[in-house]
Length: 216
Ligand code: AP5
Ligand code: ZN
Image (cartoon, rainbow, N blue to C red):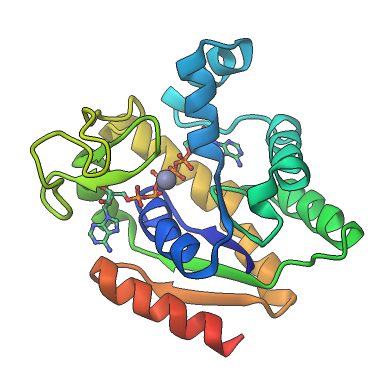
């Protein structure tokens, strides 16, 4: 499968992506996770990105496009297909991705939009816990880990993201509506778009994603 997951912060992109990977055997490329791994390693890019991410802004298109291109071309796990999560996030990113995929003869097949109203996202974001190394996400109330504050798979501690506070969320939502939502129109034009009500329970959202993928 070759698809992108689009949706505001807290829509459930990172929650649903592992289901897609299990089902289709594609790679999961989450640009936010990739940036957080640069931060954890203390690279120059990580230092630069952290300032922008903590303020809820967007990292430059050039950096993000190069990061994704590198993975798509060189990561063997992506040969079977890919699930992009958090990319593209602007029209220029969508256009550059398209050009690259067409050049490789592997055009995008699906653009799935997870739709949730802003007012539901505050509780999702402020209650989220993540496992840093894998990017797995949990929720204090909606999706608690089996053991308190520990990752189900590795048993390692769960942490809160530094941009998961009400103030940064407001800016992330603003960036989503202004810069990312226009890519929905872009994908609608090419007939690969499906919109999903992602305010439902995670299992119901997953069923609706499968229905949407079968339709296209
Ligand atoms: P990124 O990491 O992509 O953050 P985001 O887009 O804000 O999305 P989130 O990870 O917050 O949401 P999600 O949809 O994955 O939600 P999740 O499944 O975890 O990007 C971070 C930053 O990096 C950006 O702000 C930007 O600065 C930079 N960046 C990244 N990519 C970039 C790019 N391409 N260009 C420029 N800059 C870029 O779910 C959230 C919570 O809700 C969890 O606790 C979960 O358990 C719970 N939950 C999930 N589904 C449900 C449900 N159905 N019902 C109830 N609870 C649910
Ligand atoms: Zn995510």
